[in-house]
Length: 119
View 1: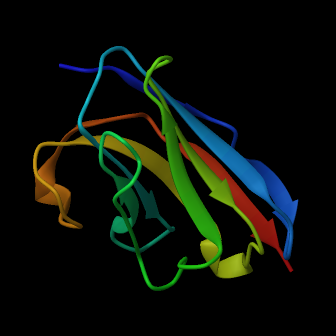
View 2 (view 1 turned 30 degrees about the vertical axis):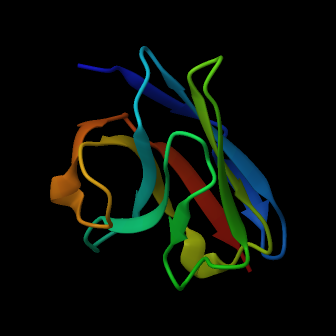
């Protein structure tokens, strides 16, 4: 079991940037970010392998968001640029047991951090 704690969410205007952080209590090969908007299902955002050399992004965030990690500190980050109102959601980091975008591939979740983008 790995404990995950997200931070860095907040209120930002469209076009702005935020950097989310996820502190893990232990190491994990696969780490991902998901988000859930009000009234919608939780959806995949990005995932990284251990080295950070292999990443995968949802089409909706590709080119705007970047996932990175500092394994020495057990940290995972999500740099979000050119934010849009439709990016408004609670963002969760998660530990993956298998590579991929399916929620079922992830077994440990943080409590989430709210990101609100105003137009």
